[in-house]
Length: 169
Image 1 (cartoon, rainbow, N blue to C red):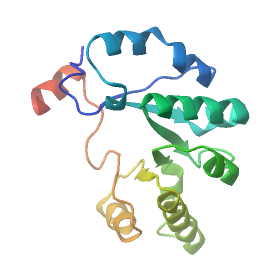
Image 2: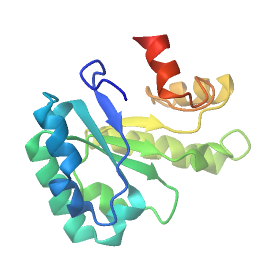
Image 3: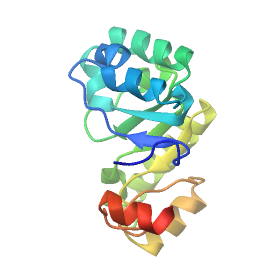
């Protein structure tokens, strides 16, 4: 088991059916009792989950942030992206889906859209992370576009918890 006190901030993936379940999750209560502050937990809520019930999602995200959680919109652009979602949900981070990277070196339109999403999220006060970075060329292109957080196989393949702890503890 990961020692959450050693990770700053601790990241975990919760996949609730309804975002409101996050507010009553026993896991969060347990972690709080173990001395982990809410701000140390990064909650990734997929764009799809947020779009399923937008009005409820707006209220839930607002309450989570009021409690101090760091809220990330995950997989942005993987489905039917909504600008009204970005307008109405005050999240801390936008995680851009790897699908945006597939054609950035072949199609100018793809580069324009990706750069615009990065600029829009930053203008709305959100940190931006792009998922699925696999090459140095993609990393350079994203850096030139103003993105400063990345995730993908270029940095590391998934590794077991024990290997992670041995490498980074």
